[in-house]
Length: 117
Image (cartoon, rainbow, N blue to C red):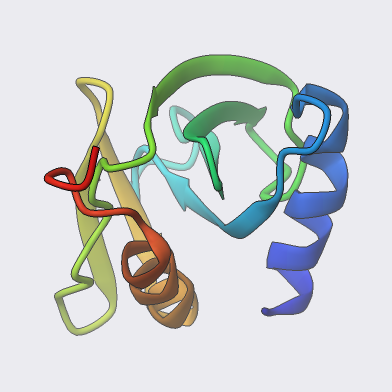
């Protein structure tokens, strides 16, 4: 887990339920060219759910406002693209930088299969 992913995990602790374990975390941004309108989002995968936080304009690692909670079976990959992976989880495109590709792949690998209920 990268340093940024560890910081995201630390910052998300207050939003976790008792006994919930983080399986991975990464950051993405809503725009890659227009910095004025750019917002960072953090995605935290636990053993129970997928959490998406607004991190604001300047921080990639804060978990300020919980925007959405998705089932853990939700896929976030496989990562594609040379530099950016485009991801749409909550109706907005999230651009995930290449440095988080291994984290995205690990989150999908740890996800339970949708058919195992």
